Image (cartoon, rainbow over all chains, first blue to last red; front, side, top):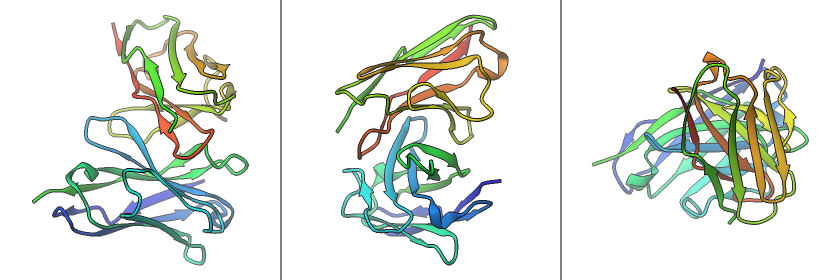
Length: 120
Length: 107
């Protein structure tokens, strides 16, 4: 079955950088668009970014545009999120998730999440 | 950006109750709406997509309706496993946006 395992979450100082990874298995990764969604402690869900199966047309939330970069390595079945110029408000659990095959804007299977804490 | 407004933010109900959660979009999204359930410390789970299509494996007591700007999630007979937080999400256009959530509590 679909398995998504995020890693790379850590405590980082404001202004710092971090790269998250999401290892995918149990499905044909190369055919699915992928999302990152985050959730600040005690808060609701915030969509962050999307990358299609071919990695060409990417989309970002305004809150992370110009600071975060989504990428994928289809040969390694792995999704990435490079986060630069981190701010305290980026503190959250970050989930990677698949889009539905025919409707990629619908977030389907989710990983268990990895915690990013931005603090001095 | 499309704003999504859910109501109520908290709902107290008993096992067996019929529960309805409302979601409103700031502009028309046709039927491009999804509903998710999230339990504490867990990832969200897709329940309904395209406003009314039940995700595989989701109990039939869950149903969704609506189009345009007004949507509802209904649980026909609340079960103990249903106490959780529910989110709507517009899937019409980027940036994707979620509602603020509805926490369903035990009365």
